[in-house]
Image (cartoon, rainbow, N blue to C red; front, side, top):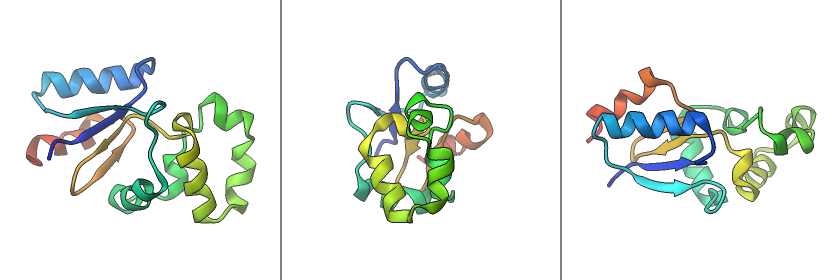
Length: 120
């Protein structure tokens, strides 16, 4: 199964990640995160595979995050509420995301993405 690359085309970090994938000959299925945002079911599978706490999947520098005042609200929300919120709007999700059968990478850090070269 090809990794799924969730991205927002206007995001410069997503553009760099896509370029890196192409330059490293890593095939992927492209998915636009705003048009086809992650579902609650997907997030429930992906969060454990990412090894990160749910709050690390939020796009904290995004306009929607700031408009909703989530910096102060997340701490009082249950995990279920946080997942529902992430699933409600693709712009709330930190990007890019790369989803494989064995792991999920959040954001673009080249040293972490190197794993994709060996996970074929």
